Image (cartoon, rainbow, N blue to C red):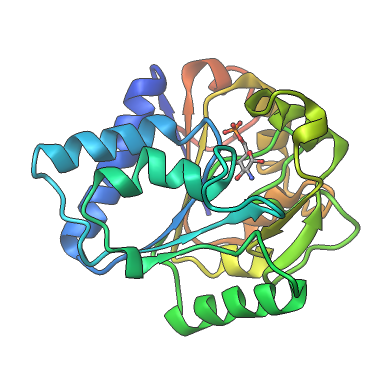
Length: 251
Ligand code: GLP
């Protein structure tokens, strides 16, 4: 079931998302979080850091799994997702390095890198809360539109649309890696709860596919309609053009 919550602005959306995570960690100090990168969750991470500084949350037993990483970028590359997480969250809270899990973007054997991450995900069982952004083409993690969905951790060829969308983080689109390693759709769907954030109207079409009643591998996020517990947080701007039919929770 998908529940939609509409927020006045990005800050209140981010604040509520952070509160949701903090409530979970208070109830379950060793909660397993699935984390996303991209510009959308930046406000959420900032709020988590603020709440940590105010001693409202303790990350010492929290376990994290990130969704994806660019192939070929080392951890210390400023555009790598590991670097992003370290810069915006990991280095600013008391999370234990041993509890941080990341797919390896640098490897000699792609199959081995995928199997390793898949094994770590299997060993942990279920992610308690998976944070998601959404690509303007409907991708989640780096599960790109395709003829079929891939369930496990895999290497994916980035679409032209994703390369263009993500070029803003690089000097030019030629520098954007062409491949990524990502959790599969099965890994994401196994999470107990999914919290998807969207704050930009370039995501409207992709979001509407999540409310359409059709599951389409060409819009990977559409699979979320089959999940038992998905929360979608959007701002008022994005909400305007959504075709969500049930009563939305307005914050
Ligand atoms: C990337 C990430 C996704 C993210 C998407 C949207 O491609 N792999 O996990 O959801 O970008 O990014 P943004 O939040 O910057 O729009």
